[in-house]
Image (cartoon, rainbow, N blue to C red; front, side):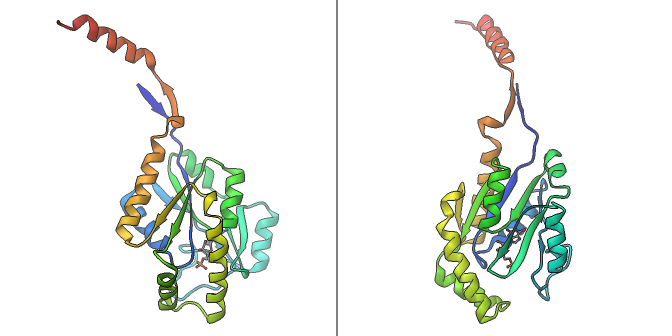
Length: 217
Ligand code: 5GP
């Protein structure tokens, strides 16, 4: 009776460092088989616990600039005033065309570029419960110097100012609750009326007609 477009969703998730975006995404990936993470390219230094090709593609500035020149990136930006980050185009649209959803965890500059190029993407902003809590989480993570913490905080204020560019906001004060809310958003998006490709009104009419004939008063 109803046929929906079998195209995956491009899901853009942004939020300040330490807001829990990665934890939310990891839980979503465990709960949903039909979702993949896009792996970004970056010139930032690899952290001890990170793996090249799993967390990021770690490249030199020259390699990154070459990728820009060759039009290999869907979007890119200098994040926290320091390092290049970008989304490789390779395979992304093939994956979406196979009906698989793809999550991009990117900053606001990248999100705005996606909005220009792929307006049907779903834009979700994750917020921490408070700035004090965020500062605590970032210091506990121990991966930042004082200077980089300061730079990250400067970016946070800029990003939060642009929150109205997103479709949804999720406050991560409880991880499971934030995951459930994000999943609810993704499920609701699949039910949008504009996703209907074909609605077979005739089949509804036929059944209605049969019912009326069989109906006993
Ligand atoms: P981190 O250095 O903590 O791994 O990432 C810092 C920020 O870079 C993330 O919070 C995310 O917003 C942003 N980021 C990661 N990958 C990309 C990307 O491919 N493009 C853009 N524009 N931002 C990214």
